[in-house]
Length: 258
Image (cartoon, rainbow, N blue to C red; front, side, top):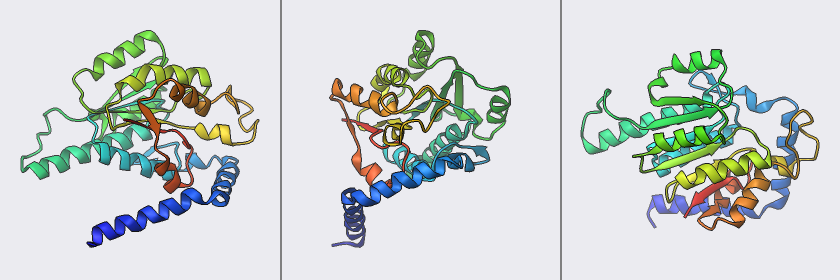
């Protein structure tokens, strides 16, 4: 067995072991629950912009982008813009690496992979910081509800001509809103690519963890995902991702189009 294959098998055995360790999985959920008290996900940034994510999910997103090589990433929920910057920086790396692989120089004025962010309220200071960032030329932003018909229509218009699309849903976390987002944007996901639904972990946490929010156990992204999957056979949960991450805010939320 060659070293590359041997290492791949080694990693797969690790992931299989984690998938079967229910005690460790419970410990991971408890650890995550306790970190919520300290707003743990607010502690990180990507290329200078705050990114409200856990590091494990940040790593998972870069792996998915590298593996699926999208030419368009659609994200609902912008906040400080760190997630848009992460996606844009990975798109820049893809363009650079493909230019190197092809032996052709990268044209800085040519077409490039893009990121489209949607948020109901893009605050002025965040928009200004995102537009001033070196990755800004790869990012487009739309302000409005991600499930409003005019916004959905605009997203579809901008997605025209793109062959490989990846979608990340991270805005309003109520069942109704997330299900509407899934119905609207999942059809844009290309075969083999992903629709990532964040904060499905709400369903696995004790009720009342978010007393000032409209979502809770029984009304959250995971319940929306379950209803969506019950009537959409072209998406499956990639259980391997959450097994290897162990700590993730998106258990059952990494959806692969088959």
